[in-house]
Length: 337
Image (cartoon, rainbow, N blue to C red; front, side):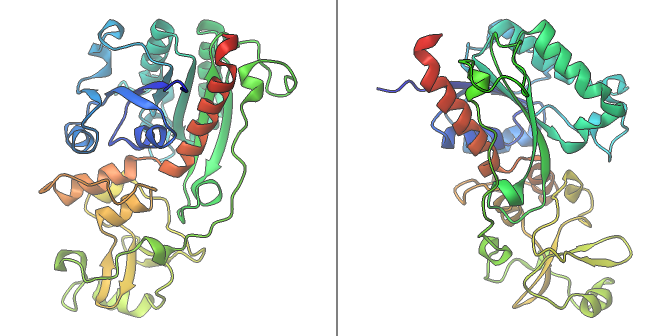
């Protein structure tokens, strides 16, 4: 019988990375998340996972079980173009959260790790931020460092433009060189970065086609209605209200969903359906993040929280491809280590 690899998830959010690893056949033993509303959604969907709802600074490594894989979607604000761009010097303390991830890797010593962050992490502070992360992982933790950037529409068969950086590494392989080590027996050499796949899903495949609640529609008495009526013509694409004008997404995919959808709603993508002009619902948003329809928000959760959580999440099928590859490598080399 094949071993069931175990996972511990830091900064788990509503469980996008956890969903991906479960889909890849792993067992998510524990997770950590600080946001109260995100924890409500997580518990609603992951009843068999121990969730530590607290500031990671207060979570002790001895309080959690050892696992084969540690994942971390550490908060991206400190590295985001939309944020303060202060990185490790972020005055709100968000930049140092990578080092909390490093603390757990150092103490638990998993066989592998997966980090996920915004694409801009690669260029932040002229590359110095990523350089510090790399040096910490290689020199201090003695793991390999394999970074790559994937766009959901090219690697997940999900019609959303969403570029993210992923970093994978394996224990005791700090000497791995991504450019020269291609034929040796290192796990890092066996790991294959996902290759592009054809985008066959279209926007219409991820939409509900029945009438939604009136609160999602812009009726004729709404102040934005005249502009929407003048600019929104196509039903095969998605629009966005950009404060003073409407922008059509001409690539026929969903624009990047953001946590800002939960602050006033003006960033929520717009469509035309048989009943008028409306926002995507939260359930449609997580569908554009690749979640299955079995994933639900708790009843009576405010829309603002639902939208924020959807925008903060990951695209599950992309991460699942990475998870499957990590598990394949661990399984094939299990007897060697």
